[in-house]
Length: 279
Image 1 (cartoon, one colour):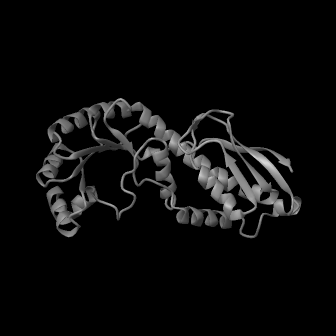
Image 2 (tube, one colour):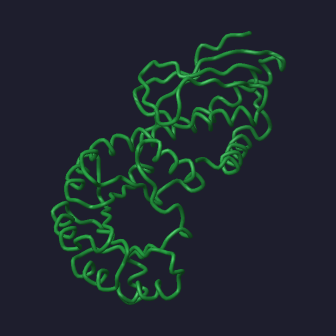
Image 3 (cartoon, one colour):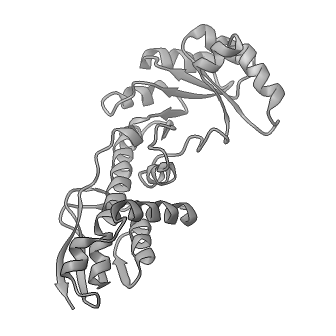
């Protein structure tokens, strides 16, 4: 679920950035009492996401109603009319770009996630996101991943213990890092450790890590490590995973595949506000 305190703050900042001293084009051309109606049209196939965020832009601006015939996570096709806006013309025009930008971004992430997810739908593994999100947008980005059929990894550094390569170096080894984490964090916290080879995997198992991340391993290596771990820990694989090779990784048998591309290498879904008419 979206936290609208976070969403509204983001929108307000975006509006302040986009019109620090008003919209001089709209304000000089459009009568302040004019009213209009326009259609929201999808210009390519994909998964829609951000319907309520689009609506929040106009709730904050005021005097504009939005109506949509689709919900987040729904598949849409090129040229579909998915909704409309009606009300104060100035506010429709002022909010147009921000509302569309946010929905296009969220729909792009959802669509990309869905493409990855479809590739591995016949395997037990599940696609998850990473912390490779745009700062301040992670709430929207991770929501979009879920709408596309993926799952969320930890939301922030405060959520879970994830011991990565630099932690291991600083602590003096895999076992040392795990032991320190277990000693100093709550018993309710699971401990995940990033491993780069079979020796580190063995160390992680001996130290009883809850989750073992197999980092930058080939599908063949992942399959070997999954067999070796044999259910003694949850297995995640990550690193250099693309739409072209994710099926191989899915076949390798890890429980989860984490992929930064979902939130840093997506293409926006093209959506437009068209056919504006005066009321």
